[in-house]
Length: 112
Image (cartoon, rainbow, N blue to C red):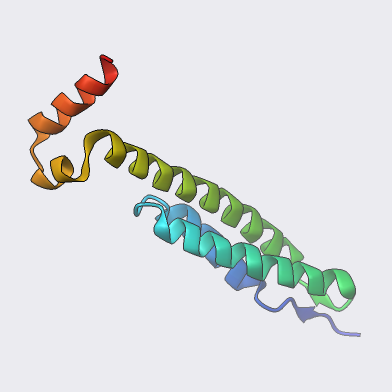
């Protein structure tokens, strides 16, 4: 019996890598690619678990899922940090792009 390549295992790995590479884009892409890697990885690993002798490429799905989890965590942490920073400084201050005003607001928060 010839083994087939596990469906979407390479795609899961690519999405996992992309989630780590792109989490710094305000966290949104890291979360998106991380979720895709986790969902597709779980489906691929379930298919492999049902019939382990039929498929190869389980390692790509496992590693991609792990990278997706890391990308998801980092992306969510960055989103929470940005939301916290906006709540501290204020959106209007950030939009002025005045570095001195931003620094002043941060110093006010730190000296409370």
